Image (cartoon, rainbow, N blue to C red):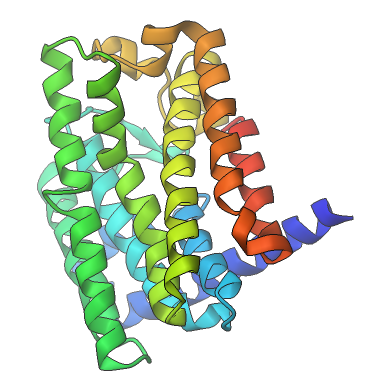
Length: 295
């Protein structure tokens, strides 16, 4: 029964995010501009919306209406999407497909994709600036998103990702890479939910520890799927890590070792939620779904 309840709640969160993203695009990313068209193509083209769901669920487990965090969740999706457009560019991973469709630079052109990504990241902060929350909350949210997405967060992870195409990474280097590249925005997601809810420090601490573990599990499973799934299943090229000679959790530990590492980190994530009791049931089930995902 709880599985059906989880699926219904997840879909409700995603539907709310999709509807709000469309409205925000009409405000900040008009189709009259080609970069607006390209930004909307990438942003509204599907995806799991895991980060947005984490923000809404964290607001809910903090005892507030999850829709308080809706604009923060949408801003995070905008910033995440900009990073995906950049990640696919020829100067980065050079991937031709994303979410089962041509990448932004293939559908449009490289310059338009670059500008569309820039438009998304600036729109993200415009969304936060105009969110229907207090000025103090909006300032905290802007600082949170900037830290998670900036040179101390996701962008530093992108730098490390390129570095370790040229150099061999060990365990410590790989963990640092993914704490920044993947983990920083997943942690930012729960922090944004907590900021919207003005959560108590102990709740925020538990959720942050949970998110740090979930971010690592998400990346480990990504590495596994890159060698076990098909392009059709993932909606993006498989084998790109090997093609780019990247060190991954699979190259370090093998498939069996990577799966074991994902399970161990998932258990630590679940334990972080213990202080929150039954209120965190949705987040527990989300963590289980992420470690078991096939796409």
